[in-house]
Length: 392
Ligand code: HEM
Image (cartoon, rainbow, N blue to C red; front, side, top):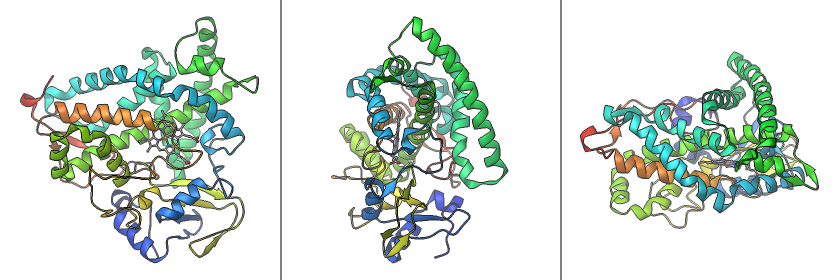
């Protein structure tokens, strides 16, 4: 089958093509230079993500990010960072996130319009991560610049001059972040605080402290893992609800459906289109042999629409139960920030739907996908609402 899974049209609405592929051969080979093996059906995607003996997470990516490590290094570093993601630590962030959400909306509410992406769903997760790490608010503009550069790294898979520039910028920013971290570490040593940096500095694994390189890797991974994804979850939720007015009405009349509505958005428009793995040895999948060392793409967004797993898979149904979508992954790398992402989405949706009366899309033009090839969601989402009806 000759398809371009990276085209704008495919990334805006890949689902009909995914369905066609699942119906014929659920495993494809994209020839070089990309040379990857995407797999599309629920069972195979789940197996590729969960079978860590057969599939390694060590793919071409920064070496100090534990997302791309295998046991035992992954186990050690994940155990450490998990301490910052306990239910208690996440719940403790809620009042701060509510305040940030409220401030962002206050800036736009009088005007009756905004670009949901630039004005709300990009800055909110950025500020949450910066606050969680312990970056002082005065340094947030710098942090914003770093996170833009780290996020641009994902364009490098498309190749070309833009990719080369993204790599050069990433090296420069890594050095700048490292210098900043050196200063912060010496300051924090004398005045420990209640934040992630302090906890990481004090943490010991097998009697050893984390190196500065490991701490830097954590921060960059949190930027990559925690921002773009949450941005897309919020945007995709608004898209799904505005495209399905009956479901929006149902949610407004039964607000207790909010958690299950968020799960359905995650299933229906997964923020990540795919996850990467490499087989440690030749592996047979869907009747094809994938050679050791090749790139396998577990197409999560396709698995979530597999009708062998989900009844009426192409219907957006906020009451769907059970909803075993794979959008947060499966197995030992299961998203460590899932509870935080769910909480941010809950806060965002209750604010946006509760405060913006008559919320609607400001244009009927098809939306442009975000630049990173592995994510699904709009680059801009102009919305309108009735200022008179808005609660302040
Ligand atoms: C809607 C939002 C999010 C989605 C859809 C998402 C999705 C995922 C997925 C699919 C994985 C597994 C990757 C793999 O198996 O290769 C993952 C891992 C991870 N996520 Fe998330 N994520 C989200 C939000 C967050 C947030 C808010 C944070 C942190 C603040 C975060 C931090 C991480 C980290 C550190 C990992 C690596 C875990 C490991 O390798 O053990 N994510 N995420």
